[in-house]
Structures are given as C-alpha cells and as structure tokens.
Image (tube, rainbow, N blue to C red; front, side):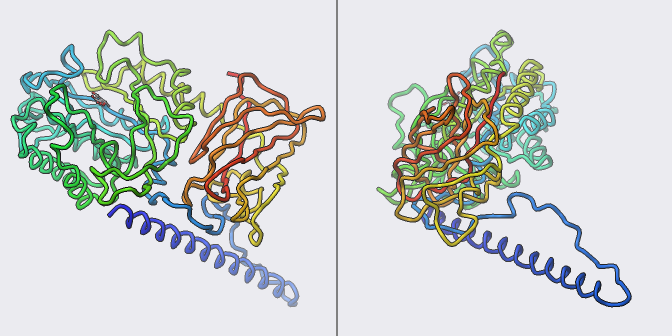
Length: 507
Ligand code: FUL
C-alpha cells in the first residue's frame, strides 16, 4: 500500500526529527551542567580542573527546523534519500558488449559473453569518487541473457566461458557496492528475446521468479529499473503483464527498494537525452497499473537516463564520441538543476573495465562541479523576509542561508507570496543560483523570480516555475550584485526554502 507507506515514512521522519531534537536538548543540558561545574569549582578554594566536554562540531544534519504542515503527497524517507543523492550510475554490460548491435537477437550463444574480468572494483570506485551514490546493473537486458546463474533459464552466465561457467557478476557487483557503501540496484528487462514464454501469461511467473532471485540473493537493493519497452511486436501490450504482482513480490522481499519507470516510486522523465522539465512536480496522479488505488496524487520524483556514449553498450568506435566533462556538467544542470535525478550510463568494455576516456571525463566533470559550487556567495549573509513564521528561530530567513539542508525558512501558513532578501558585504559577480525546497513536507512553489540590486536599482535576473528538491539557474552572463532577492510568487502553500545560494563560476 504505497499511500499508507508514504504516511508511515513520514511518521518515521517525524520520529527521527524528534529524536534528534531530544539528543540536542540532552547535549545542551550536558553543556550547561559542565558550565555550572566549572563556575562552582572556580569559587572553591582549591581549583579543580573543570572537565569540559570536548567541543565536537555538530554536523549540519544534526540541526533541523521544527516540523511544519504537510502538503500531500510527501516522499518516503527512502525517496527523499534517493532524491538527495542526485546521481545514479547505470552499467550496461551483457551480450551486446560483444557484438555489433546494441540489442542482440536473443539467439547469440551464451558463449558470446566472454569478458576477461568484471572490474567491479573499478566501476564502483569511479562511481563513488565522482559522486554517484546509487548504481544499477543490467542483470538482464532485452536479449534475455542473465548475468547471474538464474535457475529459470539456461541463457545465462553459467553457459559462458566467464569463470568456467561458475561466475555471477550480479553477486560480484552487489558485494562490491555493499562493501563500498554504494547502493546496489538492478535492471531486469521485461522484453526478453530469448524466453519462449515472452508474450504469454506464463511469462509473469518467469519474471516474478527472476525478481525473487534478485531480491533475495544479493543483499539490500536500492533502485530497480522496470523498463516499459516491450519490443517491436505490436501484439504484445502492457496489459498482458501483471505489474501489480511484480510490485507485490519486489516489496515483499525488498520493502525499501525503489521501483522506477513501470513502478510506483520513481518516474521516467520522458526522454533518454538527460533533459529535465522546466516544470517538474515530484508527484503525479497514481497509475492504475502499479498503484492499488486511482486518482490520487502520489510522490514519484523524476529520473533522466542518458548514456555517456552514443549507445547504451560499449562500442570501440564510439570512443571519440564520449561526452566531454563540460557536456556532463550541462547534463547535471539540466537534470539535478530541474528537480530530477541524473541516471548516467557508463558501459564497460569487453575486457570488463571502463574505458580510460570515460573515467577521465567523469573525474574532470566532478572537479568542475566542485569548483562551480565551491563558494556560496550568500552563505551566512544577512537576510530579511517579507514574512516568516513566528515562534521558531529555525524557521527564519537565516535558515535558508546556513548551508544546512535540515533547516529552512518558512512563511505563515496562509502566505504564499513572499520575498527573501540577502545583503552582501560588498558587491559581487554572480552567474548561478541554486534554490531548494524542504520537500519532505511536500512540494509547494509553482513560480518564482530572482532579482539583483546594484547601483541603486533592482532588476530581475531570472525566473522559473517549480523549484522542488533542487533548482539551478544559470544566467546568460555574470552580473554584479550588492543584494539579491528570491521572490516567491505562487504555490500550493507556504513556501519552505531550505537553500538559497549563489555562485560565480568563470569556467
Ligand atoms: C531503454 C532500452 O531499450 C535501452 O536499451 C536501455 O536499456 C535504456 C536504459 O532503456 O528503454
């Protein structure tokens, strides 16, 4: 019951926040008692060395603004974590790695799959070091060939030369992900060119059995990709598949997994070019195929899949066409900057390694991003707002400028239209803005503007519709500003802004 689960997730969040608040209170009390001890001991004749608690700096996530009202739907804690992760790495590896086509026919012999190794350590390390916290491996792509020794088909790694037929790349990959603290995920293609059952009702059992294998043998699963592509036979249609059963089975064994595309938790953005939408709501009307109720809004954030190469599988002739670091940065801005997650495919070569060009471009991409967002011009600056919710210090404007994603500025419940103004110490050049809503209480803002003040006048610099988990806006050219203003125009309720930041990046 995903709707109920949403609420459960929320209650868990509330409990978590309350626990953190309690812990902070205890910490405060401890500090006070140490102070009291210190004062008391300094009055006595024999000075006692006061035992003062080492001042451990609080990690920013320890401090959170108090709860506000939800504007439904809201994310589960797992969805929120996934959205905050921003980037997922896709690994397409299989029969097409060893042939010319990107699809195969389902009839290539299993021996075709013949990698020297599967350098899972490199895949996961590169992903982790360049900022990808989730990964998805094509356990089975459209050819039907399985990278694990499935009990339900002979078309798998067990009949390939890899490790003399004793190999299991899903296991190697999952183990490495778990060891490095990266979330393990898999893609299990629905379209199966090898299975004689495909297109018959019995295929549902086959698919569910393979789902069970993947959900029970490889530890915790993060994201599962359920591609909606059914192949080119027009007589095979979506209503021939038991989507509800796939969801039930998956959630039974992996209740905290996120089912993407033809699943209830993550939605496809609608293209495979890494292009987010100008207006992106992280929810939509429930889908009758995989939600057990109809006509209600459900939280389902978007994801943009795209390959670092022209195709999904590695082809040596694509080497000169690997996306440049600058193009990867653009993809980040067009996806994460538009309230979506970036799902970037990096396909290993037939020898089981990433190509060095892909690796170099990924590290350079990371370096550019880090430089771009290194210095937040608005961090800790003086801020005022046309309205702020009274009663809590952590709901005030400074909470949007403290670099802490757990705190936010929020207006009174009835105030949707509001300004947040920030004054800089000296005038500064700026060309990027980043705004984030506290979406754990629901997504609210539907239009906003950003203004800049210089030489005695305010001018509008940029504008947008939705904000959501993250919105990044790039100005055509840098401008000099003494003050900036975030103007929230319309929305579904009181705006709750956890981040308002600005950067200058000259490239
Ligand atoms: C598509 C598939 O047809 C492609 O081969 C690829 O796997 C992509 C991620 O999804 O629908």
